Length: 185
Image (cartoon, rainbow, N blue to C red; front, side, top):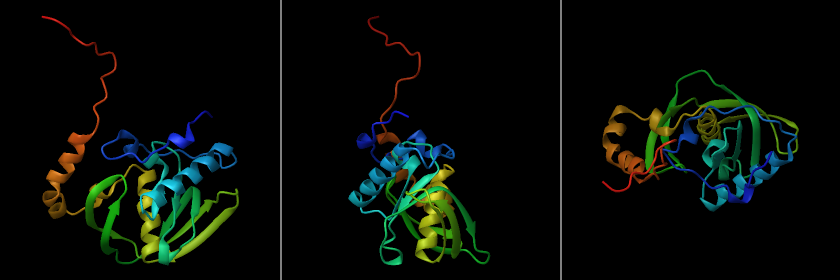
């Protein structure tokens, strides 16, 4: 697999990479380790608590976390499977490195269990409540092409519509495939 890992950067909404469903990856591929380490670096540089592969333009089932006080360890989750706790979902404010300037209330399960492969190829099984469970759910959403703007309330959507529109308008426009530039009259 050929990939310029040092060139990876966090992509922003409405980049199409954020909407793709991610595919299972081979945890033994050495590029996966390099990408995970680059993602940890980008997460810290952006002062985030998690970062999913789609946020760097890769449709891979991979995310990294460092949930600070809730779990201050840099963790890599390859091909994660999340099981949510039953019971009443709880609302709390969330932001996203790929959707800057937007913070909204998102309802999530209060606890979760995650099964994945770590950066060293070992199986990992963890359970968490509260903030850490929320981080896992947020990052897992990215693996399925779901963003916080998809989970916000109708009132938040109405309140933030100009901010969302500004993000959409600020996105670089890619030329249409096969389009020719017209010159002259």
